[in-house]
Image (cartoon, rainbow, N blue to C red; front, side, top):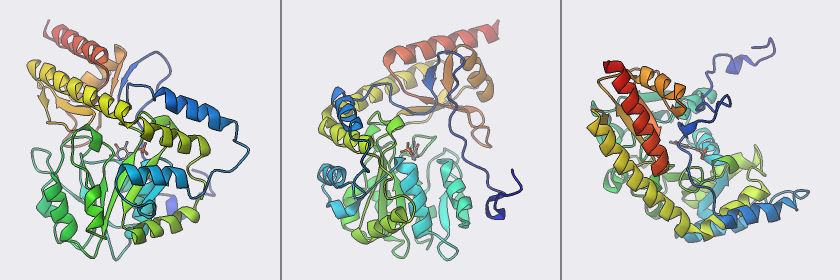
Length: 355
Ligand SMILES: *Cc1c(COP(=O)(O)O)cnc(C)c1O
């Protein structure tokens, strides 16, 4: 830290992104990216737009917001687009939480939530998940706090039903409930239809996981017009050109090829079920995931040791050195071939240990 760093941020512990090592070619199952490339239409849209980079992007991102609105049966005024969904989450924390509206989220969830809260000096409560890692909805009903729930949750992959989400939203009319649906396309129910009924519900989504665009940085928020206007006040106070030309057109093209992406999601779900079964046969306990990853622990080998052994063999998974989940690894579900390599390596690691 330099002597010039503001005291406001001196104690800040930044988010640690999943590693992207360059020392060898890994099978990357550690950051929940899609193993499938973007559709050819997306590549063409990016190439076409790259010839217009001398011009600023549309600060209102009208084309993309209209397409998103159509896709999710809302109006464009109910949509904001951002540089990844991390950005809409950041704006939402700034807009809808403060000393008088503290935050509430699970103790085991997306690691960015406490970072954003600390960045903005927002008080927060981390509510322990149940022993089985599920969220107890009653911990979030009638709490008079701004609630943030990833549904499905990360890194567990477990999801709440729409009925449970609605109960939480309906019981906190004086606070915003933020539902982070980064993984919803892999088998959970979206709360977007409820934004018509509840003015305190903000749903966030991303093109990073199910739409193969992690590197393009495109996220969105859907909610009541007034909530979206608040987010836009912050967006225009930060960076009105937050979504660049190429990313906007990539997003538009991706929405036109929705069937390609939804079909990829079905493949991932099949591969997830296959991987879950194979891991269970090897003695792992595997949570029942609705996302594009599985969260698994093996009584025959420590979580960190498995992570390190797999890395040595060129397979990257995500290990969190954190109480309660230290024995687990979060494994992104990739192609069937990648998952076969994963399982083969785990078999060999376990065999070596038992010699
Ligand atoms: C990946 C992820 C995000 C955000 O990803 P972006 O790439 O910024 O869109 C948000 N929430 C959760 C729970 C995630 O796993």
